[in-house]
Length: 136
Ligand code: HEC
Image 1 (spheres, protein in one colour):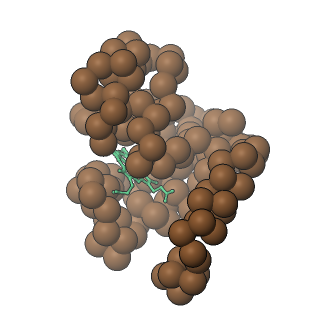
Image 2 (tube, rainbow, N blue to C red):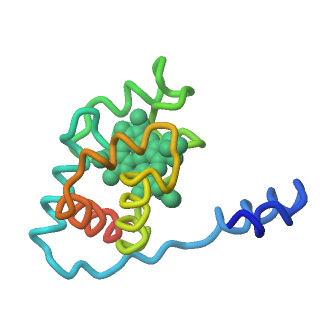
């Protein structure tokens, strides 16, 4: 990505971002229902939970999301729908697993994700990816 990203002018970056933000996501078909269900529970129940940062908010099983969205964490790095936290719903499972592996090995450097990804086992990564890729 580096050659592609550095070749773009600032205005082009804004245009590309606007274009992608307007695309409709097409979720994957769930192949293993029980694995996706396990991934869902991992996504919401870990401490800190993935959902705490990544969820677009207001979803089931997250009584704290409303509080965080409007509260002190809403505009910081942590919080529902924060602009610098990528949205994961509808992303391809293979991409999610690949990025988690890259974070875990340190090949991709993140602000918080290296530690988060390193704490997930292989099966955990696949389960969480199956769950996320199935959400529109
Ligand atoms: C404290 C906030 C936080 C938590 C908790 C968190 N993430 Fe992240 N995640 C981020 C941020 C911020 C990024 C952008 C890269 C970076 O700066 O680390 C990211 C990036 C990612 C990406 C790459 C997305 C892309 O488009 O390339 C994936 C996949 C991901 N996180 C999955 C997870 C999973 C699964 C969990 C739970 C095990 C989790 N994250 C927990 C904040 C968080």
